Length: 291
Ligand SMILES: NC(=O)c1ccc[n+]([C@@H]2O[C@H](COP(=O)([O-])OP(=O)(O)OC[C@H]3O[C@@H](n4cnc5c(N)ncnc54)[C@H](OP(=O)(O)O)[C@@H]3O)[C@@H](O)[C@H]2O)c1
Image 1 (cartoon, helix red, strand yellow):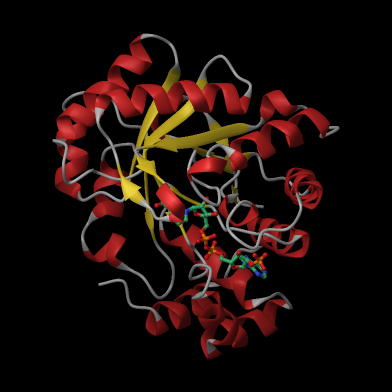
Image 2: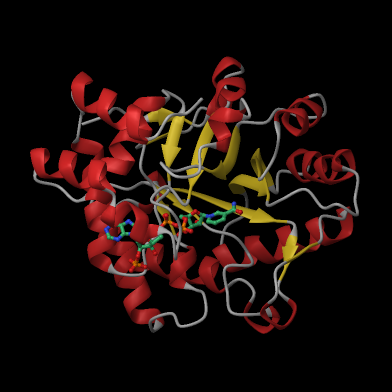
């Protein structure tokens, strides 16, 4: 099994595959009872890092749904819930189901208070700026997170959907422990734009979101000849090969595959056990060049 990885300089150590909880709360979701079962199955399978956001919900009337579901699952789970790291985000809104930016300091403060309540915690282990807001200087949004950290509302700060320049600017204001950007065999901008190497060189964890291609893009992993062929050699799914490949590409990378079904979560967790051979890595690197 691939060893636990550090979330930057936070001192938090987690298994390199966590659960992306978003599909449990979007439109068309399964009933909450099943969602709790998916979360418990993921934790039973060894995932100890849950990724959520206040806006993982149907619309503005439902904000916090995913965080409340996680709080419920952690109450019901038979294991040691204090060993589970939950990361959440603020900086977006969902009016009528749309996704819009609001990373103004006032909104971030209110959103963080609501997340504390929804997650039923006194402090949030890792809180991300969900995305820079074109209408608010990044320094103002990051400054608001720095104040939340000073007040003890959050312990560590992350950024999501950012460039190297954004990370540099934010890091000049407050320590950044993790960066979460889209990254999978088909979306390789995080390498091409130098985000992963910048994080690696600066002791920042890189969290790969949509690691098997995303809600509609997952079919590309399922059907890609290279992922399927290598998967046959290990008798595992192409999704697991996509995840195993990502983990071996960077020592600071943690993948957070999403799941709305129990089988998906358990299958993804098992990818932590796969160490691809050099030949298989070379074959996949050839299929998915990162430069
Ligand atoms: N920061 C951001 O802006 C941002 C944006 C997007 C996502 N995220 C985070 O990243 C997480 C993952 O991204 P994502 O959910 O968009 O895409 P994803 O991880 O690429 O997965 C998409 C879908 O693929 C299926 N899948 C994943 N692993 C599988 C497996 N082993 N076997 C079979 N099916 C599998 C799941 O289907 P089923 O639903 O059928 O189980 C899942 O819903 C999200 O849950 C969220 O926490 C963050």
